Length: 280
Image 1 (cartoon, rainbow, N blue to C red):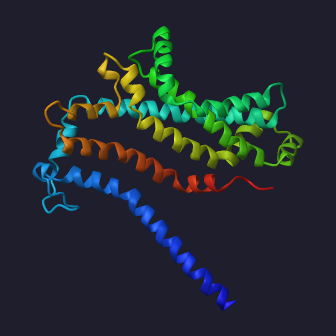
Image 2: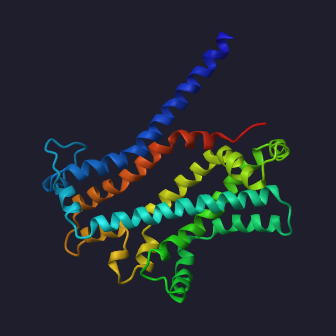
Image 3: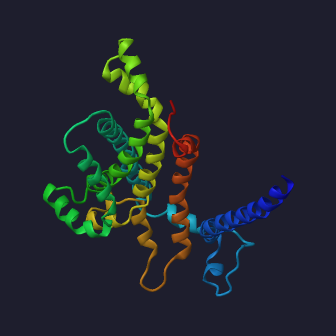
C-alpha cells in the first residue's frame, strides 16, 4: 500500500504543478491588463516593460469615464446581455423539456439541427444577418444585437438543459400528476427548480458571449451611436497616430468587472450545474 502511495504521489504533484502553471498562464494577461490600466502614461510607453508600478495612477480610468455617452454604452450592453440571458434561459428550458418529455416527428432531426447550428462560424453568417436585419428594419437598434445572440445561444443551452431535464425521474412527474398537479404547475414549481443549476451554467455562457460582442455591434450599429454597446467605446482610444493603451486597458478592465460580479453571484449554482444533474 505504501509503495502504491509513493508511486501516485509524484504523479499528483506533477498534476498540481501543471494546473498551477496553466492557472498562471491564464491569469497573467488579466494581471497585465489591470496593471497597464493603473500605470502612468510614461511607463506604458516605455520600452523597458516591468510587471509592476511604483506610481499607480487613475488617469486612464478618468479618461474612460469622461468619455461621452460611456454610461449609455454601459446600460446598452447591460440591457442586451440581460435580455439575451433571460430569453435564452426561458426558451431553452421550454424547448429542452419538449424534446425530452415528448415524442414527435423529426425530433431527432431537430436536435441534430441544433448541433449543426453550433458548427457554423459566426463570421460566415454576419453578412446574411446584416441583410436580414436590414429587411426587418432592425439596423441601428438594440434588437439587431439581441436577436442574433439569442439565436446563437439557444442551441448550446437546449443541448445542455436536455441532459438536466432527462435526469429528472419520470416517476416524479407521475407522482405530481397523481397528487393533482397540472402540467404547468409541475413545469414551473417542480421541474424548473431542479434544472435551475443548468440554467445558470448556460446563462453564464450567454452573458459572456453577448457582453464581449464586438462583431455584431460593429456590423449592425452603423450610424446611431446612441445604440452602441460598451466594446464599441474602446474604439475611441484607437487613434491613427498613437493608440491610448492606458485608456484601452482601463476600459477593458471596466468591461471585465460586470462579468466577474455575475460569475461571483452564480458560482455556487454554476459548480453544481457543471457537475451534473438530479439523480434518481
